[in-house]
Amino acid sequence: MKNICLLLIIALTSSCSLLSVFKSEPLVFNYVENQDYIDHLAATGREYLISEEKNKIKSDEDVKKYLEELHERIISSNQSLLTGKDKPEFSFIKHKTPFMFSLPKSQYFFSSGLLERFLKSEEVFIAALSSEILKSHRFIYEKKLFLPTGVYGTEKMLKLTRLKFEEKVQVNEWTYYILKRARFDATAYLNWIQIQSRNTLEFAMYIDDPTSLTREEQQYKNFISKQGVFGIGKKINEANSSKIFYKLLNNIARTK
Image 1 (cartoon, rainbow, N blue to C red):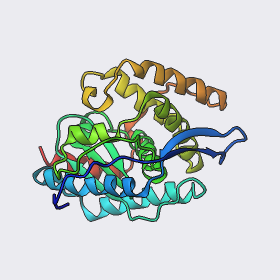
Image 2: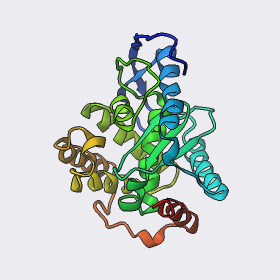
Image 3: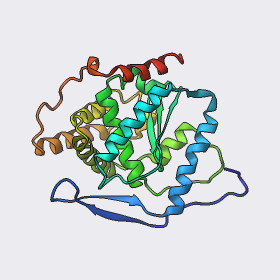
């Protein structure tokens, strides 16, 4: 993005969407509707990758295919909720701090530190990815003021994409439906929340408010209990992951 002039960008509108895809009681969350803001936010992804060019991790073609097929399975199983048509782009960044975030137009970003230390289970990886797919396709981003200076580091991107507690709770609940509809284990998302809760120091830059994780975890437990889900808090077996997922982890490990 050429810095011809500094523009002050603000999302002008946001609204509530009453969506009732999987049950009679609708879940409500705010999402950005202003297309100009969405386009500008999406464009920051290119600027971020330019700033992190030397830290980008190249994925094998079969790993890329695996991620694209995984994305398609989640989208096709939730067509009434996830309607984006953009080809997904998965970027892995060599960075010891664990983080992930998404941007509009199916852009997904993961740090090597996240996969090496905390997302070694394919089930948990899929659960975490599903929440980012939801955010990207439904434009679930808070209105933020930002100057398009062309310089977007990791900390700035995390601030731009961070949600308030109430919105995170709603995203968590919708992620349950997305996983269930795609025939994945929805309880794995609880493991993702618990991973963050147990490692608040490592996730400090990603989370912003570590004290909210205990409440977030309890709310998700209460929610899935009401859905009649059993086995809450089960231990995830990393050995159940597929060979291609291990290849993804090996791609990351080779960058040390």
